[in-house]
Length: 384
Image (cartoon, rainbow, N blue to C red):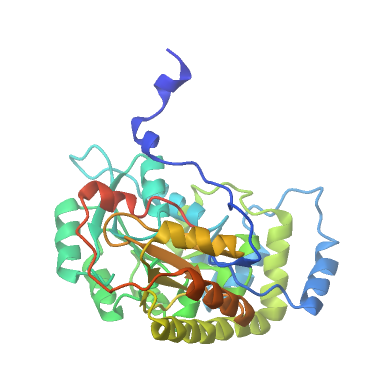
């Protein structure tokens, strides 16, 4: 028997991470911040990193970076676990809480779709069973359907991405809070990767709900290149998750940069969030006025558009030097593009190109998707 006979069957439907694709002058396809570090901060960071001990192993618990993130979020350091991006933290959660329930062959991991593909990938990679339910046509949660879904499916873990990727939808806070209150028999993970752009968080529930985990990312501060995710939860729960983490998951330079930037320049970094939110609202209004797409309300740093032909429109934009993300799938995401919010100049370039290439579209409800198609809607894991 060759090595191919040893491959787990469920991995055959997954895809390896892909490169960034063709480069473009205007990059609006990866949910990155559009602004580089201010020159004075970049120079100061360079001087600090120059003294980093690259001949030594990293701190196994990333204590300085952990303390800086704890100060940023207003929690105790032992409430945090740092990951090499949000995707690593998602995998650690599934590994830690993946014990099959009594009488079940595998643990189940539940989440609404369409959403981030990282939940499905991590569930399958860890030997768990994905349990998917569809959102409503407007990408909001059907709370009654969610309750039925988890009651019948009995998942170990429920992932709720808020604001959701790729839709930008901020699911009703009261609905999510009530769900968390009722479901102490499972781990509920609220993924707030894009929460800094939403203006609200569920972090305040953490002290009274030991089964709740909140995920945050430094990407919102314009630090996507550091690729650092933050898991926040009850200290006892966090200690269990830490057992599944590789001891040197964050390198010396990453730890040093996080500690330096959050301790000394957090306020200036956060100013960029307000700028991006203002640009998001301006771009949304311009797209609505242009009448060439259906644009969905967003509380993240991107907009979801439905166009007449997503593949052709994305290709035509790229030919004009503007890169967006084609997220079109059968079902709710049919004909959809995701457009990250860039600088005012980037957004102006996108609008000019989009108005040239996009055909007008009549807004209509998407066709129902098959169960297989729904499963494919979140197939690709996203950058944190």
